[in-house]
Length: 561
Image 1: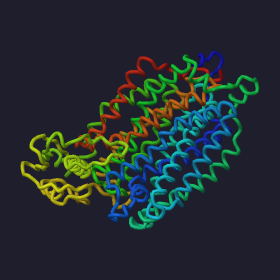
Image 2 (image 1 turned 30 degrees about the vertical axis):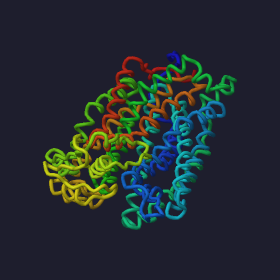
Image 3 (image 1 turned 45 degrees about the vertical axis):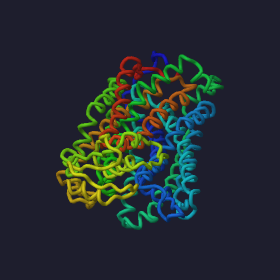
Image 4 (image 1 turned 90 degrees about the vertical axis):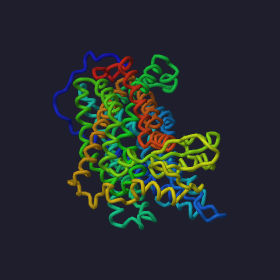
């Protein structure tokens, strides 16, 4: 880790013109890159229907049911996260050898072109299985590009920032992920509103992807005007740059130890808190609470609009009190409050579902030998046993169930009454009618929260949901606002790009990016709509404990070494 600054002084003045341009250029390009990346998550259900709704020629029916398509779409979203650490290694090495500027110029070109191609890619109905294969390939390219983008932008800004203001300066980079998501939601909402849901689902979903080519042009033009980081350029001119950054970063235990501590004691918890507060919250409302896509996206958009400024608040605060206390407090508070917050979201977004979960008792009665494990985060398992298909169907309908092992056949019991179960993977009218008669809401139920237009925010339940989502965003800003400055400060200049990028992208790409699919799989396998929250709670708690004992404070280190 860098040594304590001896000669560097805290500057009290405002930003210079050059510093403002550095932050603008780095942040704007990164916003556009996150916009490209998050279109997948925001359009998970549409992408699932278009690219994973492969028709079986023998039956002329979809090969996958709706739940499986949703999981596949989430995995297409997660595929980009899986390869992000590899992008961090590849582009981190280039960034530490060649320079920061040219590396993140290349990454944005890869990201922008991959996103544009998605917009013109034929769907599964046109070219069959080739469509999802090409789609996931493009998603992998995006992940590789993003793996190099973030570390470059954060390092570049931090190396331009004066001592005592690195948290504040890099916090603008931290807003880019949320602003990119917000921008993607706005474009999607505008397109949905202009075209209507049928046309949007059929072809209009391509427009947000095609728009990215305009954003790409702006980003490249701005970044071509940047100069190299002065800290890196000075080191390179003096011949002190690393010839083997991967070896120095990861084969040297003194540095590798800091990489591990940064991951487990910082970024891992930050990643799960971030993706719970933004992506899983959106997925929870749409797929579990059955809030329509237009309303769910508006609710998230409003919470982001209200909360994004707190990235800068907590980034600046970390310059005064330190990075560590803010990040770890965010992890701990989130872990302690996720359950009550999500239960309050349910009570306001779908009160009929909340009441049904409390009052309606649904049991799957079957032979224990005929029931398997439903945990299926990768979406590749096919369930055929009636016990398994019955539980999977109930989970798809957001019905809380328990399993009682007795007898030899399979039956469903709803509030003490036997219900005939027909082994059907996609629909079972008798079961659906029984649970709805007992109190579970129908699709489009009048009690489900709904926004007719973007400014329909003064209805009490709409305002309540936005307020709860805003609290989740505050947790995100606490853990994410100071993290870039902390990671930059943990590592020496000559291997900084490589060293900071890997733990960041493992923590966010693997622990965070895989959260929606894994949490949904936990829900499906347990029959409890809140069970998926154990995933972020456990990892955020681990980070709070490990970080408290092992993560060093970094706000006063000299990063010019």
